Image (cartoon, rainbow, N blue to C red; front, side, top):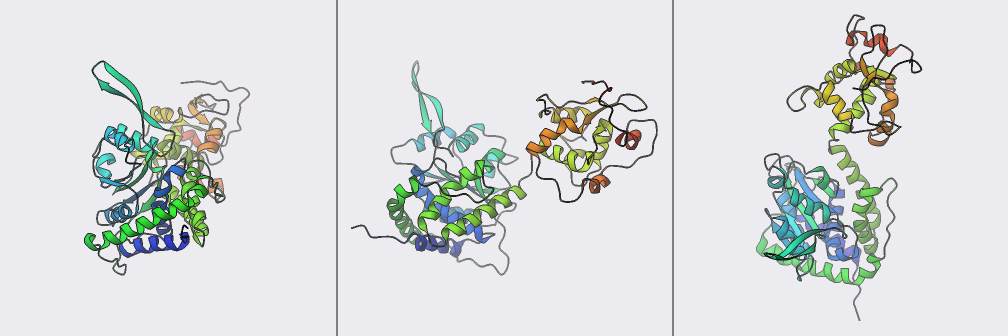
Length: 409
């Protein structure tokens, strides 16, 4: 007769084991890491497997130690600081079973000084979903056949800085930091603690066998507002928490909301989304049209914005048109500058009506303050002869959409 294993108590022990050696930035991080360790034993039950990434801005923040403890608790761990995508595809496809791949010093692969490794990025991106794989030719000389190599496996990473956006959005992010003087961790000694970790790993494997069918058929309820990729990412962890019971279902959902929110707050938006948001909140501010010259001047006056140094030069009308041309108007046409009627002629500019669809789809909710409160970011100028000097008059001239011509650059 199979002895029942208390899943909640077991996860409590996994969390406590991490707490001995790791100082994580939040309580939610301990919850997420313990659930991630357990999910690796049940990976065949899921459609997706979230990556987990221990990242920090400076060395000596405990990232590698976190990875070492994860290694003790997960099945078939393979730790590396360098690997080719082809080697990893063959590793995943081996008869030994799905590995848990642990990348230390991942900044040496994706960091600013490392260039780009598109093949490895492809492995990490494709391998988070069961259905993805890589098509490769296998054989010698002319005797070759196409073969699909699986890439689905659990992956944990540790490194300085950040990761490519496509990897970040598939990862539970734990932002590590140096320990404060009052934060203590037990010194890790492999000869002693490895056996303790492996014993805990064996118990996790046995518990996983008892809940495998339950987890494979689970459809865990998501916290309100968690949809799309974040939901895909957290579904396996919530399924593990529900199978364990006790306080873990509630703690898991609280951790889900907190870590998703923290990841959103820390990740820089793409330059296009940043541009759209600044245009909405700090340039247009409720106006229906703004000349290109005024937009450029306004963007360059926004503090802590990237517009003064894009590829080592300030944003100009050509760059503005290129960035906005990636998005479309409500009539599904690329956003382009158009002529704006003024007393001096028809300078090029942009209309709010052309931007509304992109603002709705891509930008975060507008700030709680009124739109007019943000106008301080737009320079106030006197009426004169130049387009920029006529900005104030243009902003407050009624729209003449019925008669104004449309000029496309």
